[in-house]
Image (tube, rainbow, N blue to C red):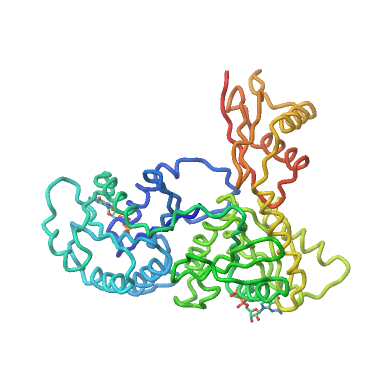
Length: 437
Ligand code: GDP
Ligand code: GDP
């Protein structure tokens, strides 16, 4: 399912992060199987009346340097304009209208994207003394909210959802594999994209019904259909100033959001960097299938065990992605690109695979026999029944006697047993524990 992207913009201290947290609140409380990757919480999934969207707080992007505030905010607004379907422009009812608000408004107006003007810090039902000043910004009636108290948020979200462009939430065709090419600048993402599209067996054609500014690419390879998702900056190079790494991470988030399979492209001459780890962590947490692609392999001097040693090092650094295949390619010489396309198809199938309940429970029963479930203070974990309740990524609901007794290490053991028996290569697996007496 495709989701809309909503971005919050505005100058510092107007309450952007308070609003972000208010909307994100419920979601953030869910404890996920975290790989221990630190990640900036400036984006989240959110849901309102059966609409699912991704919310980004552009203010959460810290400046790399002592950048001047107005230029920083403008940059953030540009990111929002580039990526978002709807923009929440937050202003401050207590402080009133400022010149920075006016500058941001000018950028946003020119973008022609839907903008919802949010007048924050209206903590009671009195109309703000500055209310009418904000009409000057040209976005109609300001929507009054109090992010900290939580007033007006429902109405605001109604308005956000009403502004989603048509078609943004359509279901994807099931037989098309959506691929995001992620990685840091210069890793070779655009070269890989162009090399794939230049392959002999690849037939590129335009996608019907895509929006004007979408530059996703549809192609067929044999009987298989793919869409290479545009990560702005791959096809259209550097529209927004480069240099601020966090921006490229945000763009990657948007692409990963719409993908089935993520290629995590690593520059072979540099190895795994912190940003690669971050991107890999996002793909993992978002439950996408992944392939670790070591590009520029042509530049690496090889001896007998170079590939084996390199793999070991990558595995070490991206330990939480132990399920992801590692491939060594060269966009330049096209080495193993054909294989990579086949691998994309393969992990995508694994991502969507369902196993039969009967066989699954046999595997679990055998696993429990080989390695007894843990116990605590005389009480032992009992697993009654396991059933696969999700795909993309595969999710297993485990009916047990007591959640406290399900230790991470035992869950990991069960995961390994499931993988040994069924594969699930390239895809994360989720467990949901349910107590049953
Ligand atoms: P940001 O810089 O735009 O992300 O702003 P913050 O969310 O960090 O908020 C800046 C300040 O405004 C903080 O002290 C918040 O507690 C305060 N604030 C945020 N929302 C409200 C609100 O609805 N009412 C009031 N009175 N204060 C708020
Ligand atoms: P992007 O920023 O990730 O899209 O990276 P580019 O595709 O623009 O590549 C960055 C640089 O690396 C360019 O100079 C490419 O020609 C070069 N490059 C990309 N892939 C390869 C490769 O497989 N081998 C070699 N030797 N150079 C490559």
